[in-house]
Image (cartoon, rainbow, N blue to C red; front, side):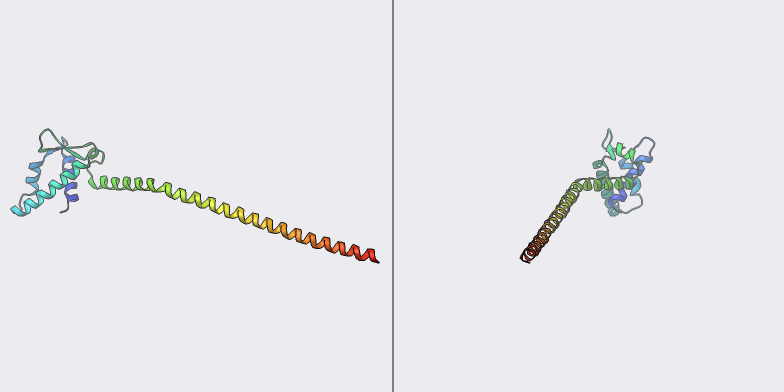
Length: 156
């Protein structure tokens, strides 16, 4: 049995109780009933770790005496379903990571967009300059040809 399976069992037991609390020593005695001493100690260790996990995550808390375990607000919200809580927690953590990383990607896209528009403008300007130079060259050739034709006409 894993710690998370034990946490699921504890949370379900606390949630299903009418008062929303259980006596942990009675719960452990019931869970270890029928096992030999060595196995019972291992199972108690697993359930103790699972209880610590539940308390750390706010699903359960200790009652008036240290032996009473009560349902916490998060345990009420997830309706005693530990898997649902873990899934929500993992999703929340993933969204938090995405929220931290997303500005980096958007910055890269903005910079790439500016770079692409800069390259396009540069290319358009170079084409315009080449076209202007080509037009001036054609105009000068035409002007020279006209001048040559004028000179040849004036000689005749």
